[in-house]
Image (cartoon, rainbow, N blue to C red; front, side, top):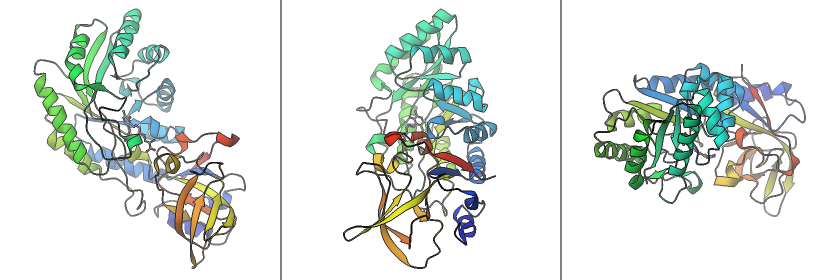
Length: 395
Ligand code: LLP
């Protein structure tokens, strides 16, 4: 291994942890590295900022379902937000109590609904009348009451990438405000449905908090419109963004400002519970994709750094034009060069960065793509028959 590498990488990870670079063997990259100390610090910050007695934070399992990560989040006492039976099973296995699991998604199958009822999950976040009717009939067959919240489409522009905005009328998610009264009535009259309240989610990687304030206003007016309906809970979803450009100077999102927006702007009724579903903000910064330089290729007027992990290991740049900070964690060179950092996949979109300033880079160097703990490992694919990336953890 390259001399100085351990020192370099010790600095690389938030000063607190040590990446076992000297133990990393040829062929073990690409892999995800998780800084569990940072995850713990982030969980402490979430819990401190959300310490109001009626606030309940569910971790959005879709962001990262690595068992080690899930177990840690379960042990911290958070609930789980899930969107498939696979996620429900992963959450239960990791130790999340079933009553603290919520289940969303526009396409829940009969088998998923039945098993979720058997587990005794806390709430179904229901996305349509068609789904509500199926949940009702399956619950009736089982002789149970299904806890349901109606997912309302609040028609708010979260000002994020159009693939991850969900709260607009044109999106497939949620139920239009105009249909809500009818469906609330349906729930209340049903013998097999237990109406719990309303669910919202406006989008992901939301960095300007104003849309959350607008969400509070929408929820207030909805509640004012239904004064006689008992609404035990409000679920405001997730979406809090992170600082992809500054993972070291800004590793923990400003949870206090986020939770305080809801504390200050939502007019909750006495005894009403407030649920959150945060994914990215909890796990993004603790993870990095570590990938090895296979070749440095001289192109026409530019140089390419070709790494062994591409869009199959981390798809966010190809899919959302996302940029993850790129670092050469083994080069000790003082010479800075500009490179296009690309993966090995046979797709032109398999690019992590163009014109990236990096220290002089050579074959065999290790490259870190930072802030990859959310929607990284979990979205990896086997395209081109590539193996899925593994994972290592700070201890
Ligand atoms: N609740 C619901 C109903 C959701 O649809 C989502 C994310 C969350 C909670 C968690 O959102 P978060 O706190 O992580 O922003 N793959 C994309 C992100 C897709 C998010 C989908 N829904 C990406 O890599 O940016």
